[in-house]
Image (cartoon, rainbow over all chains, first blue to last red; front, side):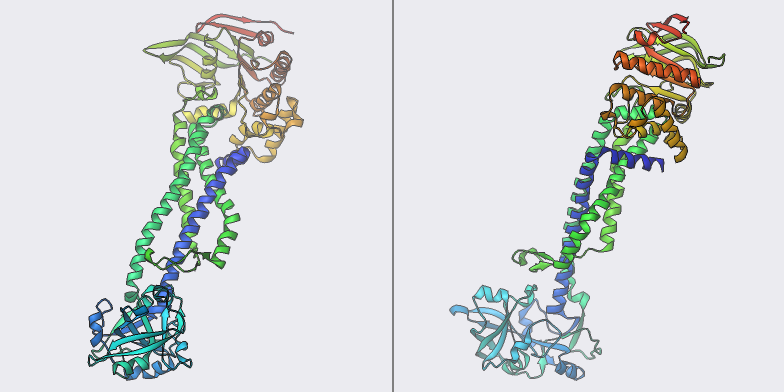
Length: 390
Length: 234
């Protein structure tokens, strides 16, 4: 108790020197929490977007369907199970039919995936209600990336060519009913979405689908050999892997930031012991043991971290709360980073992140303060009293 | 105020320091006794061993040979902890350069030894206030050392040394950084404390102003006692 009392008195007595150290250390707290909160928020946003735009809460795939092998598509469809018909009609599940196709932007041919989805589906965030507009041609939805890459605008006519189930080529004009803006590139680039019933009729397979996407409502297990269940964990395995890889990167950043803060404490302690030899000698002469002085200097270093947590909280809480409420505006999305970046990332600061950071900084600060303070135990007090450098 | 009770007993004390390839002998066979309530000084030129002897008596150093008993405890046999306890409770120090803790106020500097003794807050406040009044600094309690003159700093240092009512005060060149007027004020204060509280004062000095106040003068030359004389003062 005496050690902490004296440590606080020494720190407060040192005035500006203390507050500069404390402010620098508090910046470390806030920056560590800010960056990790932003990266965590980004991960959550990426996964949430994927669920809302692509995977739903789970899927059934036709047994032949392999999204990485387009040649499987011609044989990857089956009638929507009767047990799910009502749900599909109510939009509670989203049957999707997938087929290879081509389209002709500005006279060039380009392979695409043509996807059929019901206009009334409520499972994904795709604006399929645009299909219900008064459009004489086949209404189509395309993503922002697809539109930008091919200079397509809302209302444009696009010629699409496909092969039906008998292998016969056919073509039609589709009208771009809407251009959606999603952070999930895998539902956007190289894809055109049209109404499911029109696509079924184009391919000559009415009532059939390649995959069935479910929302939050549970559905009965499908029996038979046609459909294979894919749970959310499996569907998001890839993004989970990307997040895991990215987490390693953020851990390195965490350690680097922490090391910088600890370097500041270490330097301060070394300088402090170097400059305060006379004080150390005097304290020993007045009745402190060497180890009491070691403890005092270690406590001062650790108290720096405690004060930094308090100061960091004073300006960090409003700042971080503001960021969590309003989000962090991000520059133009860069899909090449592995996860799509939204226009705005909402950081997520978990209690565990904050507590772990505080405890970790506190423990590390104590250790880093102790290491140089051990020198005091070896000092000759008679030399220290005179302020002689040892 | 002096009594026959011996508070410091030194017998054939030798202290050597390694210096290059050989040893330097700072103290060479010192035998001395100091009684309770003495106002004595170790005098001699620089390098005569005054400060070394004071450090051993203050349990900050230990002798190479011989025996040093301070307040009935052998300096050689004291553990670090026991030595610290002895300094904390029974020995006060006054240094040439005051050695005040720079970030503390005058009050906090004087309070420091009492904190180490874990004295309760009320008693502490009273003792510190009394000590500062004694040295005439009751109005400077909140001043930091940087805001005080040299004389005032040394008076704070005296207050710090006597606040715990030690049996011995060791003062190493206490007036070396003071002008004549301040030196006399300080010495008068210490003389008064010696008379009123019975505290034993032992100085290490070569300042004539200090020597003029001493009632016993031990002259050291090359680590040996060259003379030891009592001086009658009014």
